[in-house]
Every structure is written in structure tokens, then in C-alpha cells.
Length: 399
Length: 219
Picture 1 (tube, helix red, strand yellow):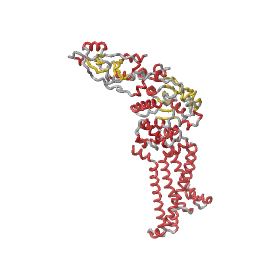
Picture 2 (spheres, helix red, strand yellow):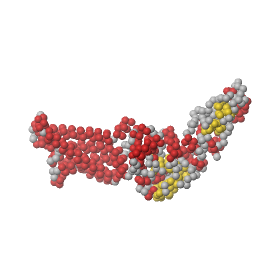
Picture 3 (tube, chains in turn cyan, yellow):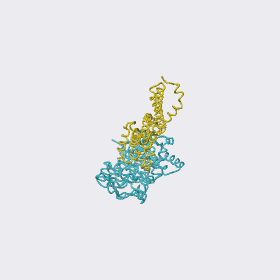
Picture 4 (cartoon, chains in turn purple, yellow):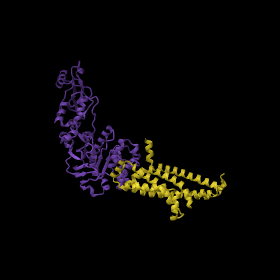
């Protein structure tokens, strides 16, 4: 069976958001090389009263300033306990935690917490307060004047993508996704340097979750907060984290590295198993097309002979070819289209899937597979760059 | 049967007794609320105290009012203080139970969020927990108020009583036409007071909890 044209029926996003492109840029290079540590856990342990084994035992972890660190692991791995020890909702049994260079226990808990944003799965908005009042919680507590609070609330409502007229509504009048946006706005209100997020997108449906994840990354591109994010979903961890800490039961840190490193070299069997059997595919989502060599593909210039087109199709084993004038992609044609023609015309069917240099290899694979072909066209704006084929992608999986 | 002419001649007196009735009730519920908030705060902060607090207030609640007044008169005399001690002690069980239940009913995630935002424990109680518990607390205040309005009539036996004094006077005449009128006027007015107080508290709750109404509208 011959290959078919490189357009998928249901295709990968035709236009990728700037955010996705930005995220995809450079697997390991994504880790900013900052030595500056925002949160430091030193030999922290927690045993709950009546508990036999520690929930967290001797955990040391540094969270670099301005990065998203995701704590991920199975239930009972102490990830939420670890998170709550940072803002002292749970006090450690032993060990020290430093936030921005200061010992967390050196200030009163409620003062510490006003400098640490907190977002939880159940959202926890105050139902008796309007959206504006909810967002204004911490600024009010720390004593900002009314004018400043009002301006900040307006700014945040826009920042998290809510409508201004929602300000005077009550939480119960909003959808789950909207409520969680308010939760994020409330956490950001007093501009804390640190944000703690405990499975914030766990209770919304997958489509909303994906959108909220994307928005969080866009927000982070602008705000550069230090974020500690807890999830049990490894895909979410890989998507969001600059670094991922994989925890085992009892708060044992199994691996702490960038998603690309973890996927490429799982530290042990536990990590490998936790990543799942589709680890190779997951890795592909971190590698942008720009890092691999593209093939010119089965292309013929307009005015080329029918013979030439046939040779190209034979060489690539396809039953179609692309008409390319310089770096302009005019479309694709099949052998049938050439019947009765002497030369290749200046036109063709439009490509519907446009992969860009910043699309990931996983998106490329998706485009190829859904198009039931072996290669997909890559563009930089309107400029045709070349084709990416299945062989190239599979080489990256095993690399 | 009712001597309307007597009512006409004694409107000032009836009005004064009604005012006294309301005052006795108001003081009792207000003082009861203050004491209950204090005891509830203790019960919420130190959970082990909740059971003893409900035992004691429960026992107070079961003492017959007449017996309680008979016990108090040798100590505090035939005074408004005696009346209020009795009336307040009957509000405690209802109010404390509703305050504690209301605050216990605030979802843990909301309390955790309040802590994480940097509320102190006391500030959280006033700014978050009490407002959210308000519907349950107001329900308790309504029951306590209606109960107290009925009980105030009994305090006529120790020289107080508001409209109860009118009823007592009527009883003393062995159902003369004027006496019967006094009984009926005292009874009807105290029932009207109870209904009016209940309705206005319900209205006050609606005004104080606009968010709860919006939720109904959204649901």
C-alpha cells in the first residue's frame, strides 16, 4: 500500500501557540543555569502522630529560583506533605527548610505564608466573598491601601483570563475552571516570589486541565515565580516541570532532574516503571523538530516533467509529491493528477497540517500517523523547510 | 367577651409591658449569644471541652424554669437579674450547638486556604468561619429567641415578665371579663412577638448572607 499525502484527518494543532513553541525549545537546555536556590529542604522528615513509618524521611532538595519543580509519585509518597511543610501547614519532625535564604521557622507561620502563594485542588475560595474580594485576600491582610488593591485585582483578573464583570460575582456562580483561575489569581495577588500548587488541575476535565496547564506556563514565562507543583500525573509533571522530583513511598527521592534527563536515563527500575512503557513517546514531546535534520522530501518544481515527478515518487516510495517553487510550497499532487499533462502545474492541493520547527517530534509523529503516511512537511511561517519522516523520529526514540 | 373598652383605656400599659417583654428577650438572647460564643470558642479550640460544655448546658436546659427561679430567688432576689440568669441559661445549649455545628461545617479546604493565605487562627474564625456558619448560627438564634419570648411570661412569677405580668393579673381575677381580656391580650401579643421576631431574624439572615442566595440562583 502506497503512502498517502502528509495531511492528517484529525490533525495536530495546525498553529502552535507561542507558549508551546517556547517550551519545546531545547530539551535539557531548558534548565536555566541558576545557582540561586529559592527553597532548600535539608534532611527534612515528618512522622505523623500515631504513624509508624515516616511520611517523609530525610529528604533534601533544592528548588532553583524562577523554576517549576514538580513533585510526582504514587499515593503515600509524601509529596503533599513535603509541599505543606514549605509553608508550615505541616511542621517537619526534623530537618530545616529555607525559603529565600531564611529559615522557615524564623518567622511566625502566618507571616511566612503571606509571602507564599498557595493553590489547591479543592480551590478553597471563600464562598461568602466576591471574586474581587477573594483575590484581594492577602493584599488586604498585609495592609495595602484600597486604591492599590483595586488596581491589582483588575490586573489579576485580566492576567488569568477572566472577564472583568466576574469581579462582583460569588465563587458558586463560576465554573470549576474559572474558579481555579481565581484560585491562581488569589495566590498571585501580593506578588509572592514562591507559589505552591497541590494538584491544582486534578479536579477539572482533561480539556480544561490542558488549557489551564498551558495558561500556567504562559503565566510563568511572564512572571518567573519559583513554583513547587504536586501531581500524581507523570505527563503533567513532564509538561510543566523544569525539574521533576520523583518520590517513592515514604518520601524517598528516587530521581531529581529535568524531564528530558529522566526520560532518557531513568535512575532505577522504580522510575522507569513510573514513567510507563511509553517513555520513548513521552521523550519525543520534549524534542523540537529543529534539533533533527530534515529531508528535502518528494518535491518537484513547477514546470518539471512528469517523468521527473514519477522518479521522485519512486525514490521516496510515495504515491504523491509536493510542488515546491524555491521555498514556496504550492501543494501536493498524485500520479492521477498528472494524467494527460506534459509538465508539473503551478498548483496543488493545500497541506492542512503545518508543523513548525518548534513543534515536537511527538506532534510530528501524530501528524504522520493520523495522515497515514510516512512523512510530514515542516514550515517556518510560509517557508517550506523540508520533510520529517518516521525513520528520523524512531532514531530519536532509541537515542 | 373581650372588653375592648379596657384595652382602649390601657393601651399605654400594654405598650409598656410589650416593650419590657422585648427588652427581657433581647437582653437574654444577646447575653446568651456572648456567653455561647465564648464557650463555643473554647470548645472549638480545645475539643475535649465540648462534651462537658454540652452536658452542663444540657442539664441547665432540662431544669424546669419554675424550679430554677425558685432556686435563684434566695440568692439574687425578685430581680431582673434572676429573670435573666434563668432566660440566658436556657439559650446556651441551642446556641452553642448551632455555633459549633456551623463552624464544623465549614469545608476543610476553605479553612486550609485561609491558613495558607496567612490568617491567624482568631482572624480566620471571625473573617471566614463565623460568616460561613451564619445560616446555622442564625437558625439557632431564631429558636432561642422564640423559646425565650415564651419563657419570659414565666418570669412574671418573680415580679418581671412583660406580657406575662398581664396574664398573671388576669388569672388573679378568676376570669372576670377584664381578667379574661388581659389573658387573651397577653397571650396574643406574645405570640405575635414570637412570629415577628422569627420573621425579622430570617430576613436579617438573608441580608447578611447574599452569597447563599446567589448560589441558590446559580444552582
